[in-house]
Image 1 (tube, one colour):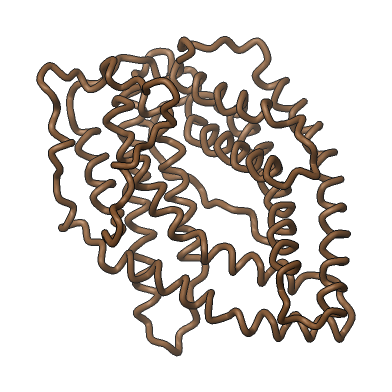
Image 2 (image 1 turned 90 degrees about the vertical axis):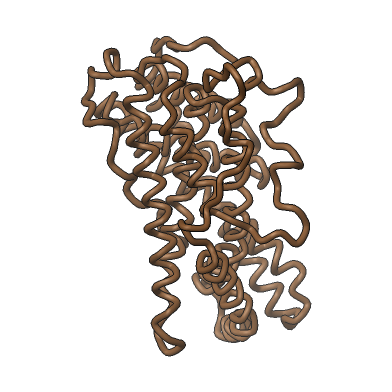
Length: 359
């Protein structure tokens, strides 16, 4: 239904090769990787804006927005292990700010995927014509969602980043202290991190803040390989925790897809340290991400069709029937493939000790 999400990750890691991670510090590995990811986000954002400035007659560059979303997701994934080096408290506002901006791009993806899912269904001529008309009526939503993203990025300039008082280190701050640990029940985001009502959503201040944090000398001392093992191990544990979920549970399958995506991005990021093992992990996670993504697309289309009162009853019933059949097919495939991929992942990482303590 939809193309496999993701573009190649930015290069980085100080040129580390498999086996070098035991000697390389986590910071020496992460600094160039994070900076490369930041620049990728900026470059993709500029591409989105540039594509929009080619004139109304130009075809919209759907891949530009897609690539921007992916580069933003990759950076957000990398912040989770990075907080162990640069400090949870320091990176929390950055993570929340990037998440809010990512949410703003969600409406466009929803419309794109809905259109692709419905037009790919095997329907009779009457139902297909009815769906085509319904999709055409929603085309404005897709244009408006894309225009919203373009406008946000057009207003967001690197020279308007602005340092905040929160960036200044506290007296004696070593970049990662006990204050970095979340309080009981803390999910890593506070109301203060979210934009206030009516406040313009920004991206660049969070990218600039992350750059400033990376540039500071003090950070926790960790080995690169130790951090990488922890990041991949945690991501794999998250996958296993949901792997036994009912395939009929759409919310659980969507959550599992997100966890496979994080495992994929983590393995790709740290592949210079683990070589073929990380590359095979990324490919395995990528296959499940794609399959579970197709399942989620069918779930979302079903939800839309069940409330699509604009469609004639016969046409809507035909579309729902086709979607239910397609979802059942995808769920069966996902169940079969999940068992195989989990076996592959277990064989790749069984007996691999965590180099960092839990917490």
